[in-house]
Image (cartoon, rainbow, N blue to C red; front, side, top):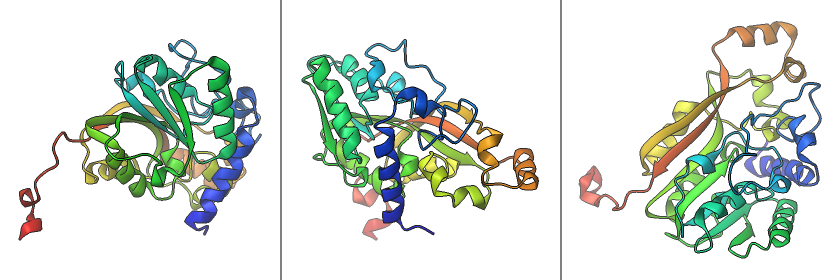
Length: 281
């Protein structure tokens, strides 16, 4: 079993390769992790092309939703995008914030940061910024963001609780997030869960949907809403690399599944007083 550090290095290596690929290559692979399917497999079937602020050069086809579409971004907002890649959601968020707002993209991979900065410079965007960093330790001060968005990234992070705590820290009181992510319903076969290739392909790092929502609530967020729920179907020619014919048949007949969800939640305007709980007893 890989350690958290080893898993992070796997993800960094894979997404460094992805940063050098085009969208078409990524769409015919396991969420960009390599040419592993003869079918066109794009885990994000949502179409960004009609969304205002969209820049095709910044779209690597790696998302699993349209979080910026649901994020309720207003003019002048400060927005942080966790796992910003080549800048796709950052540039769409910039369109919503206008010239008076600011968007900060955070990414773990130096190659992605370089590509995103080049995209921003080419377009003359001076109110976007890209920072290299781990979203378990977001390189930003506390209480600064009006909105956080993220697209198919938290499932890649081993310490999801740490990310939730960081999101809470960085958001202003009354701020909110809209994040798209991969979750599970039922148990995946252990062969898939243990496969590092599938981990970098947005599947094995996912947790149960109910546990995901409970993690958000346990970190103090409120008004939690599942804004979108979409089943993800992995082609058989990918699954056959990990499962025998018998196990593949059993998996397809089971209730287990992979789902893309987009979740909204708010940081309370006021933190609960200590004595609202049992902590003072």
